Length: 422
Image (tube, rainbow, N blue to C red):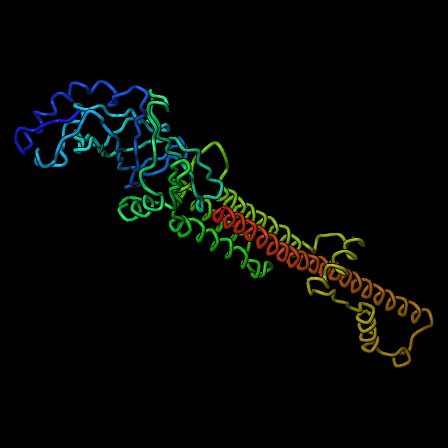
Protein backbone atom coordinates (compact mmCIF):
# COMPACT_ATOMS: atom_id res chain seq x y z
CA UNK A 1 0.00 0.00 0.00
CA UNK A 2 1.65 3.23 -1.18
CA UNK A 3 0.89 6.56 0.54
CA UNK A 4 0.82 9.81 -1.44
CA UNK A 5 1.46 13.12 0.32
CA UNK A 6 -0.18 16.38 -0.73
CA UNK A 7 2.78 18.37 0.63
CA UNK A 8 6.36 17.52 1.68
CA UNK A 9 5.75 17.94 5.43
CA UNK A 10 4.86 15.86 8.44
CA UNK A 11 1.15 16.80 8.69
CA UNK A 12 0.60 15.71 5.08
CA UNK A 13 2.48 12.44 5.72
CA UNK A 14 0.43 11.83 8.88
CA UNK A 15 -2.72 12.40 6.86
CA UNK A 16 -1.59 9.90 4.24
CA UNK A 17 -0.90 7.24 6.90
CA UNK A 18 -4.44 7.36 8.37
CA UNK A 19 -5.43 4.31 6.36
CA UNK A 20 -2.56 2.35 7.93
CA UNK A 21 -3.57 3.29 11.47
CA UNK A 22 -6.86 1.45 10.99
CA UNK A 23 -4.88 -1.77 10.39
CA UNK A 24 -2.98 -1.72 13.72
CA UNK A 25 -4.96 -4.69 15.04
CA UNK A 26 -3.62 -7.18 12.49
CA UNK A 27 -0.16 -8.48 11.63
CA UNK A 28 1.19 -6.16 8.88
CA UNK A 29 1.43 -8.68 6.00
CA UNK A 30 -0.55 -8.80 2.77
CA UNK A 31 -0.66 -12.59 2.79
CA UNK A 32 -1.35 -14.52 5.98
CA UNK A 33 1.28 -17.13 5.09
CA UNK A 34 4.02 -14.50 5.10
CA UNK A 35 6.22 -14.65 8.18
CA UNK A 36 7.11 -11.45 10.00
CA UNK A 37 10.84 -11.35 10.68
CA UNK A 38 11.71 -9.42 13.85
CA UNK A 39 15.33 -8.38 14.26
CA UNK A 40 16.32 -7.64 17.82
CA UNK A 41 19.33 -6.84 19.95
CA UNK A 42 19.88 -5.28 23.33
CA UNK A 43 22.50 -3.18 25.11
CA UNK A 44 23.26 -4.10 28.69
CA UNK A 45 23.38 -0.70 30.35
CA UNK A 46 23.75 -1.76 33.97
CA UNK A 47 23.95 -4.74 36.32
CA UNK A 48 21.84 -3.62 39.26
CA UNK A 49 22.49 -6.64 41.42
CA UNK A 50 22.09 -10.33 42.03
CA UNK A 51 19.81 -11.80 44.69
CA UNK A 52 21.46 -15.13 45.59
CA UNK A 53 18.66 -16.16 47.94
CA UNK A 54 15.82 -15.54 45.47
CA UNK A 55 17.98 -16.58 42.46
CA UNK A 56 17.30 -13.34 40.59
CA UNK A 57 19.38 -11.17 38.26
CA UNK A 58 18.56 -7.45 38.08
CA UNK A 59 19.70 -5.69 34.90
CA UNK A 60 18.86 -2.54 32.96
CA UNK A 61 18.87 -2.97 29.17
CA UNK A 62 18.05 -1.04 26.04
CA UNK A 63 15.94 -3.11 23.66
CA UNK A 64 15.74 -2.57 19.90
CA UNK A 65 13.25 -4.25 17.53
CA UNK A 66 13.07 -3.99 13.74
CA UNK A 67 10.34 -5.42 11.51
CA UNK A 68 8.58 -4.70 8.18
CA UNK A 69 5.07 -3.29 7.81
CA UNK A 70 3.91 -4.18 4.29
CA UNK A 71 1.09 -1.63 4.47
CA UNK A 72 3.48 1.36 4.71
CA UNK A 73 5.30 2.92 1.76
CA UNK A 74 5.86 6.48 0.54
CA UNK A 75 8.15 8.54 -1.61
CA UNK A 76 10.67 10.51 0.55
CA UNK A 77 10.93 13.31 -2.02
CA UNK A 78 7.15 13.74 -2.20
CA UNK A 79 6.58 13.57 1.58
CA UNK A 80 9.73 15.47 2.63
CA UNK A 81 11.32 12.79 4.87
CA UNK A 82 12.29 9.13 4.88
CA UNK A 83 11.21 8.48 8.50
CA UNK A 84 8.80 9.77 11.09
CA UNK A 85 8.20 9.14 14.80
CA UNK A 86 4.62 8.15 15.54
CA UNK A 87 2.73 6.79 18.59
CA UNK A 88 3.25 3.09 19.19
CA UNK A 89 -0.45 2.33 19.54
CA UNK A 90 -0.98 3.42 15.90
CA UNK A 91 0.89 0.34 14.64
CA UNK A 92 1.01 -3.38 15.16
CA UNK A 93 3.86 -4.27 17.57
CA UNK A 94 5.19 -7.82 17.98
CA UNK A 95 4.44 -9.43 21.34
CA UNK A 96 8.06 -10.27 22.13
CA UNK A 97 8.66 -11.15 25.77
CA UNK A 98 11.64 -12.22 27.87
CA UNK A 99 10.96 -15.74 29.11
CA UNK A 100 12.80 -15.28 32.41
CA UNK A 101 10.96 -12.08 33.38
CA UNK A 102 9.92 -12.34 37.05
CA UNK A 103 8.64 -8.87 37.93
CA UNK A 104 7.05 -5.76 36.51
CA UNK A 105 9.08 -3.53 34.22
CA UNK A 106 9.51 -0.24 36.09
CA UNK A 107 11.56 1.51 33.38
CA UNK A 108 10.15 4.71 31.81
CA UNK A 109 7.68 4.19 28.98
CA UNK A 110 8.63 5.28 25.46
CA UNK A 111 5.43 6.03 23.49
CA UNK A 112 6.91 6.35 19.98
CA UNK A 113 8.28 4.18 17.20
CA UNK A 114 10.22 5.18 14.08
CA UNK A 115 8.51 4.46 10.75
CA UNK A 116 10.62 4.45 7.56
CA UNK A 117 9.43 5.08 4.01
CA UNK A 118 10.14 1.47 2.94
CA UNK A 119 7.83 0.10 5.66
CA UNK A 120 10.54 -0.71 8.17
CA UNK A 121 9.63 0.06 11.79
CA UNK A 122 12.11 0.57 14.62
CA UNK A 123 10.96 0.21 18.22
CA UNK A 124 13.43 1.05 21.02
CA UNK A 125 12.68 1.07 24.73
CA UNK A 126 14.46 0.72 28.09
CA UNK A 127 13.65 -2.29 30.25
CA UNK A 128 14.45 -3.04 33.87
CA UNK A 129 14.73 -6.81 33.78
CA UNK A 130 14.20 -8.87 36.92
CA UNK A 131 14.97 -12.32 35.55
CA UNK A 132 15.35 -15.74 37.11
CA UNK A 133 18.87 -17.15 37.06
CA UNK A 134 20.17 -20.44 38.41
CA UNK A 135 23.09 -19.17 40.48
CA UNK A 136 26.03 -21.36 41.45
CA UNK A 137 27.98 -19.60 44.21
CA UNK A 138 30.16 -22.53 45.29
CA UNK A 139 33.32 -20.66 44.23
CA UNK A 140 32.20 -17.34 45.78
CA UNK A 141 33.65 -14.69 45.50
CA UNK A 142 35.43 -15.90 42.34
CA UNK A 143 32.19 -17.07 40.71
CA UNK A 144 30.99 -16.48 37.15
CA UNK A 145 27.26 -16.75 36.55
CA UNK A 146 25.56 -17.63 33.27
CA UNK A 147 22.08 -16.13 33.06
CA UNK A 148 19.64 -16.60 30.18
CA UNK A 149 17.54 -13.96 28.50
CA UNK A 150 15.29 -15.79 26.04
CA UNK A 151 13.26 -13.71 23.54
CA UNK A 152 10.17 -15.11 21.83
CA UNK A 153 6.61 -14.26 20.85
CA UNK A 154 4.16 -15.08 23.60
CA UNK A 155 1.19 -15.88 21.32
CA UNK A 156 2.42 -16.34 17.77
CA UNK A 157 4.14 -19.43 16.50
CA UNK A 158 7.40 -19.53 14.56
CA UNK A 159 5.36 -19.70 11.33
CA UNK A 160 4.02 -16.20 12.04
CA UNK A 161 6.94 -14.48 13.79
CA UNK A 162 10.62 -15.32 13.68
CA UNK A 163 13.09 -13.50 15.91
CA UNK A 164 16.66 -12.95 14.75
CA UNK A 165 19.71 -11.38 16.37
CA UNK A 166 20.25 -8.00 14.76
CA UNK A 167 23.96 -7.55 15.60
CA UNK A 168 26.98 -9.80 16.14
CA UNK A 169 27.41 -10.68 19.79
CA UNK A 170 30.94 -9.27 19.75
CA UNK A 171 29.55 -5.83 18.90
CA UNK A 172 26.78 -6.16 21.52
CA UNK A 173 29.29 -7.12 24.22
CA UNK A 174 31.78 -4.40 23.25
CA UNK A 175 29.15 -1.66 23.14
CA UNK A 176 27.57 -2.83 26.41
CA UNK A 177 30.92 -2.64 28.19
CA UNK A 178 31.51 0.84 26.74
CA UNK A 179 28.22 2.35 27.90
CA UNK A 180 27.74 0.38 31.11
CA UNK A 181 27.60 2.73 34.09
CA UNK A 182 26.34 0.51 36.91
CA UNK A 183 27.97 -2.81 37.75
CA UNK A 184 28.35 -2.83 41.55
CA UNK A 185 30.23 -5.95 42.55
CA UNK A 186 29.73 -7.51 39.09
CA UNK A 187 31.23 -7.08 35.65
CA UNK A 188 30.04 -8.23 32.25
CA UNK A 189 32.31 -10.89 30.77
CA UNK A 190 30.55 -11.99 27.60
CA UNK A 191 27.26 -12.24 25.73
CA UNK A 192 26.92 -15.43 23.73
CA UNK A 193 24.93 -15.75 20.51
CA UNK A 194 23.53 -19.20 21.08
CA UNK A 195 21.00 -18.25 23.71
CA UNK A 196 21.66 -14.57 24.19
CA UNK A 197 23.12 -15.18 27.64
CA UNK A 198 24.79 -12.31 29.44
CA UNK A 199 27.56 -13.71 31.65
CA UNK A 200 28.25 -11.51 34.68
CA UNK A 201 31.34 -12.30 36.73
CA UNK A 202 31.63 -11.15 40.30
CA UNK A 203 34.23 -8.54 41.21
CA UNK A 204 36.15 -10.38 43.91
CA UNK A 205 38.48 -7.58 45.07
CA UNK A 206 36.11 -6.35 47.78
CA UNK A 207 35.69 -9.83 49.23
CA UNK A 208 39.40 -10.62 49.05
CA UNK A 209 40.27 -7.43 50.96
CA UNK A 210 37.42 -7.56 53.49
CA UNK A 211 37.10 -11.31 54.09
CA UNK A 212 39.92 -13.48 52.81
CA UNK A 213 42.96 -11.37 53.73
CA UNK A 214 41.90 -10.75 57.37
CA UNK A 215 41.20 -14.47 57.78
CA UNK A 216 44.61 -15.33 56.36
CA UNK A 217 46.28 -12.81 58.69
CA UNK A 218 44.54 -14.22 61.77
CA UNK A 219 45.34 -17.83 60.90
CA UNK A 220 48.96 -16.78 60.30
CA UNK A 221 49.13 -15.20 63.76
CA UNK A 222 47.68 -18.39 65.21
CA UNK A 223 50.34 -20.38 63.36
CA UNK A 224 53.21 -18.29 64.73
CA UNK A 225 51.77 -18.49 68.25
CA UNK A 226 53.23 -22.01 68.38
CA UNK A 227 56.61 -20.32 68.77
CA UNK A 228 55.59 -18.96 72.19
CA UNK A 229 57.05 -21.06 75.04
CA UNK A 230 54.01 -22.69 76.72
CA UNK A 231 55.80 -23.22 80.06
CA UNK A 232 56.45 -19.50 80.60
CA UNK A 233 53.75 -17.75 78.53
CA UNK A 234 49.99 -18.26 78.71
CA UNK A 235 49.71 -19.37 75.11
CA UNK A 236 46.15 -20.66 75.64
CA UNK A 237 44.88 -17.18 76.60
CA UNK A 238 46.47 -15.73 73.48
CA UNK A 239 44.77 -18.34 71.27
CA UNK A 240 41.40 -17.83 72.96
CA UNK A 241 41.69 -14.12 72.23
CA UNK A 242 42.35 -14.91 68.57
CA UNK A 243 39.29 -17.18 68.39
CA UNK A 244 37.13 -14.51 70.02
CA UNK A 245 38.40 -11.88 67.60
CA UNK A 246 37.80 -14.13 64.60
CA UNK A 247 34.24 -14.86 65.77
CA UNK A 248 33.48 -11.15 66.12
CA UNK A 249 35.01 -10.54 62.69
CA UNK A 250 32.73 -13.17 61.13
CA UNK A 251 29.65 -11.69 62.78
CA UNK A 252 30.50 -8.24 61.46
CA UNK A 253 31.20 -9.46 57.92
CA UNK A 254 28.25 -11.87 57.79
CA UNK A 255 26.24 -9.51 55.56
CA UNK A 256 28.83 -9.82 52.79
CA UNK A 257 28.37 -13.59 52.52
CA UNK A 258 25.77 -15.02 50.12
CA UNK A 259 22.63 -16.60 51.50
CA UNK A 260 21.25 -19.54 49.55
CA UNK A 261 19.91 -22.96 50.34
CA UNK A 262 21.11 -24.73 47.21
CA UNK A 263 24.83 -25.14 47.82
CA UNK A 264 27.37 -24.19 50.46
CA UNK A 265 29.86 -21.69 49.01
CA UNK A 266 33.51 -22.65 49.13
CA UNK A 267 34.29 -19.47 51.04
CA UNK A 268 32.09 -20.71 53.91
CA UNK A 269 34.14 -23.91 53.94
CA UNK A 270 37.27 -21.74 54.07
CA UNK A 271 36.03 -19.78 57.09
CA UNK A 272 34.91 -22.93 58.89
CA UNK A 273 38.31 -24.49 58.22
CA UNK A 274 40.08 -21.47 59.73
CA UNK A 275 37.91 -21.64 62.85
CA UNK A 276 38.42 -25.40 63.21
CA UNK A 277 42.20 -24.97 62.94
CA UNK A 278 42.19 -22.28 65.63
CA UNK A 279 40.12 -24.44 68.00
CA UNK A 280 42.34 -27.48 67.36
CA UNK A 281 45.39 -25.32 68.05
CA UNK A 282 43.87 -24.24 71.38
CA UNK A 283 43.14 -27.84 72.40
CA UNK A 284 46.72 -28.83 71.54
CA UNK A 285 48.02 -25.99 73.71
CA UNK A 286 45.88 -27.13 76.65
CA UNK A 287 47.23 -30.70 76.41
CA UNK A 288 50.87 -29.60 76.11
CA UNK A 289 50.57 -27.07 78.95
CA UNK A 290 49.12 -29.77 81.18
CA UNK A 291 52.08 -32.05 80.43
CA UNK A 292 54.63 -29.34 81.10
CA UNK A 293 53.11 -27.89 84.27
CA UNK A 294 51.65 -31.00 85.95
CA UNK A 295 54.37 -33.53 85.20
CA UNK A 296 55.51 -33.68 88.88
CA UNK A 297 52.29 -35.42 89.84
CA UNK A 298 52.30 -37.93 86.99
CA UNK A 299 53.26 -41.57 87.27
CA UNK A 300 56.38 -42.72 85.40
CA UNK A 301 56.20 -42.53 81.61
CA UNK A 302 54.89 -45.84 80.21
CA UNK A 303 57.35 -47.87 78.22
CA UNK A 304 55.41 -47.67 74.96
CA UNK A 305 55.35 -43.86 75.19
CA UNK A 306 59.09 -43.85 75.82
CA UNK A 307 59.66 -45.95 72.71
CA UNK A 308 57.14 -44.22 70.44
CA UNK A 309 57.57 -40.59 71.52
CA UNK A 310 61.04 -40.26 73.05
CA UNK A 311 62.96 -42.70 70.86
CA UNK A 312 61.09 -42.56 67.50
CA UNK A 313 59.19 -39.25 67.20
CA UNK A 314 61.77 -37.19 69.10
CA UNK A 315 64.57 -37.55 66.52
CA UNK A 316 62.04 -36.98 63.71
CA UNK A 317 61.18 -33.53 65.08
CA UNK A 318 64.81 -32.83 66.04
CA UNK A 319 64.29 -33.23 69.80
CA UNK A 320 66.43 -36.26 70.83
CA UNK A 321 66.08 -37.78 74.30
CA UNK A 322 68.29 -36.37 77.07
CA UNK A 323 70.24 -39.09 78.95
CA UNK A 324 71.25 -38.62 82.60
CA UNK A 325 73.31 -41.02 84.76
CA UNK A 326 71.61 -41.09 88.14
CA UNK A 327 73.99 -43.73 89.56
CA UNK A 328 76.94 -41.40 89.19
CA UNK A 329 75.08 -38.71 91.07
CA UNK A 330 74.16 -41.08 93.88
CA UNK A 331 77.74 -42.32 94.12
CA UNK A 332 79.03 -38.77 94.23
CA UNK A 333 76.70 -37.97 97.11
CA UNK A 334 77.85 -41.06 99.02
CA UNK A 335 81.53 -40.23 98.51
CA UNK A 336 80.95 -36.71 99.67
CA UNK A 337 79.22 -37.81 102.84
CA UNK A 338 81.94 -40.40 103.60
CA UNK A 339 84.67 -37.85 103.08
CA UNK A 340 83.13 -35.57 105.69
CA UNK A 341 83.01 -38.29 108.28
CA UNK A 342 85.82 -38.84 110.78
CA UNK A 343 87.62 -42.20 110.58
CA UNK A 344 86.75 -44.54 113.42
CA UNK A 345 90.35 -44.84 114.62
CA UNK A 346 90.63 -41.08 115.23
CA UNK A 347 87.64 -40.94 117.54
CA UNK A 348 87.89 -40.99 121.35
CA UNK A 349 88.11 -44.18 123.40
CA UNK A 350 84.91 -46.21 123.71
CA UNK A 351 83.80 -49.66 124.38
CA UNK A 352 83.27 -52.19 121.57
CA UNK A 353 79.47 -52.13 121.97
CA UNK A 354 79.33 -48.37 121.79
CA UNK A 355 81.43 -48.38 118.61
CA UNK A 356 79.14 -50.93 116.96
CA UNK A 357 76.01 -48.97 117.83
CA UNK A 358 77.58 -45.78 116.56
CA UNK A 359 78.61 -47.42 113.29
CA UNK A 360 75.11 -48.83 112.79
CA UNK A 361 73.59 -45.41 113.40
CA UNK A 362 75.90 -43.77 110.88
CA UNK A 363 75.17 -46.50 108.35
CA UNK A 364 71.42 -46.00 108.81
CA UNK A 365 71.78 -42.27 108.26
CA UNK A 366 73.80 -42.90 105.09
CA UNK A 367 71.25 -45.35 103.73
CA UNK A 368 68.42 -42.94 104.46
CA UNK A 369 70.25 -40.10 102.72
CA UNK A 370 70.95 -42.30 99.70
CA UNK A 371 67.31 -43.36 99.57
CA UNK A 372 66.05 -39.77 99.66
CA UNK A 373 68.55 -38.75 97.00
CA UNK A 374 67.57 -41.62 94.70
CA UNK A 375 63.85 -40.90 95.14
CA UNK A 376 64.40 -37.25 94.29
CA UNK A 377 66.42 -38.16 91.23
CA UNK A 378 63.84 -40.70 90.08
CA UNK A 379 61.04 -38.17 90.59
CA UNK A 380 63.00 -35.56 88.64
CA UNK A 381 63.63 -38.07 85.89
CA UNK A 382 59.88 -38.76 85.54
CA UNK A 383 59.15 -35.05 85.43
CA UNK A 384 61.82 -34.40 82.82
CA UNK A 385 60.58 -37.29 80.67
CA UNK A 386 57.01 -35.97 80.70
CA UNK A 387 58.29 -32.47 79.87
CA UNK A 388 60.28 -33.95 76.99
CA UNK A 389 57.14 -35.78 75.81
CA UNK A 390 55.22 -32.48 75.91
CA UNK A 391 57.83 -30.65 73.83
CA UNK A 392 57.93 -33.46 71.26
CA UNK A 393 54.13 -33.54 70.94
CA UNK A 394 54.05 -29.74 70.62
CA UNK A 395 56.68 -29.79 67.86
CA UNK A 396 54.97 -32.67 66.06
CA UNK A 397 51.52 -31.09 66.12
CA UNK A 398 53.02 -27.80 64.96
CA UNK A 399 54.45 -29.58 61.90
CA UNK A 400 51.13 -31.33 61.24
CA UNK A 401 49.33 -27.99 61.62
CA UNK A 402 51.53 -26.40 58.96
CA UNK A 403 51.10 -29.39 56.64
CA UNK A 404 47.31 -29.52 56.94
CA UNK A 405 46.99 -25.75 56.63
CA UNK A 406 49.13 -25.66 53.48
CA UNK A 407 47.35 -28.57 51.80
CA UNK A 408 43.91 -27.17 52.60
CA UNK A 409 44.65 -23.67 51.37
CA UNK A 410 46.34 -24.89 48.19
CA UNK A 411 43.38 -27.18 47.45
CA UNK A 412 40.85 -24.37 47.91
CA UNK A 413 42.90 -22.00 45.73
CA UNK A 414 43.17 -24.64 42.97
CA UNK A 415 39.39 -25.19 43.05
CA UNK A 416 38.76 -21.45 42.82
CA UNK A 417 41.23 -20.95 39.96
CA UNK A 418 39.95 -23.93 37.96
CA UNK A 419 36.33 -22.86 38.39
CA UNK A 420 37.16 -19.31 37.36
CA UNK A 421 39.06 -20.42 34.25
CA UNK A 422 36.34 -22.80 33.12
